[in-house]
Image 1 (tube, one colour):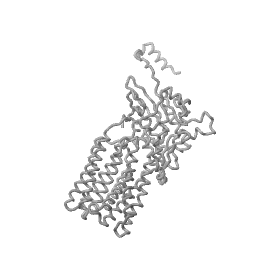
Image 2 (cartoon, chains in turn yellow, blue; image 1 turned 90 degrees about the vertical axis):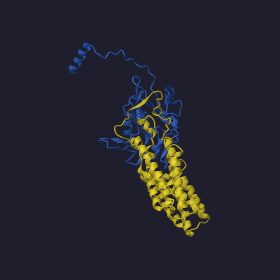
Image 3 (tube, helix red, strand yellow; image 1 turned 90 degrees about the horizontal axis):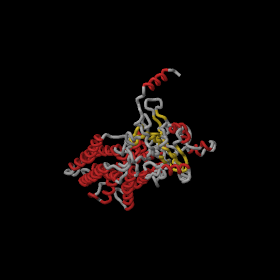
Image 4 (cartoon, helix red, strand yellow; image 1 turned 30 degrees about the horizontal axis):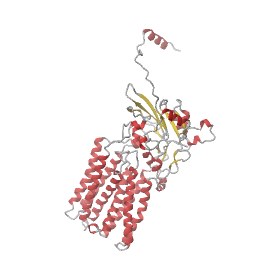
Length: 312
Length: 232
């Protein structure tokens, strides 16, 4: 699949924003690690909203006819893309109400802001899940058609959010807790990603034989019928060499998970180090952007069977 | 009504006439002009609803060339309709034709990801997704004579390899053909239930060629030379 830069940046950024809000609400309302200072809550909260907004605006960058983009909210009953749009928009009043109410009450919570916070958390989870389902519901791309896809979207979003939160809370009372939480989130995301890479190595039953109906003989492409590329070959014909895939997976593991975990762990002795945490974030962002690129590049749509692939 | 096409893989010669006819008919009509990209350039491309690909089935000397025209299958369980966020992609209740509403499409390509048969293409000029309309503007056009109220590709096929009709009616010509010839839909395991059916090549005894003498005699060679030398 042709990796579209705008979709990669959109899913990584908005996922990080939602993940940050999820952990923010949990730490704040459950008082984990002693809770967060109001300043940390405001900066992290606003960052979360900015990341989510930037991400969602970037998502319109891959549209060929953006003047109809407003219609994308109208098929909630059937389309995961519609559902993601609706949930993302419905999330905002709750997130803003939670943070804004806290600010209006002078840095305290009452029953209403707590409920708004929990609903913001629920909607954040549901939105990231919907983003993952946009890809996972497609039967035509076997690498995406698994529950591991939305699981990975959630795990990676929470992981990035945890690293951002560790950066904001470093050198404070919650510095050690947030750094450890980030390392734990990285570990979970690493395991899920490794399972995903293992899972997509297994072939399925769709082959050029079932695609053409000739199941009792070998089938080979003789002539594809066009001398230049088409929309289909441009969109779905993208392939990465196996050596390059291994290298990029190494980058994902190294920059995306291992290096950030090491950097965060190094800062634990000082009660959480902000510089190390932000360095961990840069590394994680680069690693996860690579992961998202690979997610698209490794996907093989079944239409490739008609262009000569024996199986996907 | 379940309108669709039946394509005879035994008879199709791979001439691409159906692709050209479709392209010509859709110069105007419901989906407007199909854009061409660099049509006189080095690598001409463009939007086509009907594409014919050619496959070799079997291993030499028991191989066969199969010409495979493919356009939208107008599936019963069309995921392209389910995933569309704007509602531009829709399946007509009365005849089962799947269409794209050009006024609603935002060109997100999601439907083309959902289509296993590669039926949908983005038209860069209009920014919308376009696909085979089953010539919905021809089949219901009262101003055309009855015989011409068929899809352009069906009318034009010189080998009479394409048929159009109601596959939901078990007694229609197309349904009978499918039954008698053992017609099938493509990639059934994905569960899309394509309406368009393909008729497999008829089983034919192979003509023996061992007894063909490919070295002509002297008399035949002189004959051939004389025939070529005399201008007619």
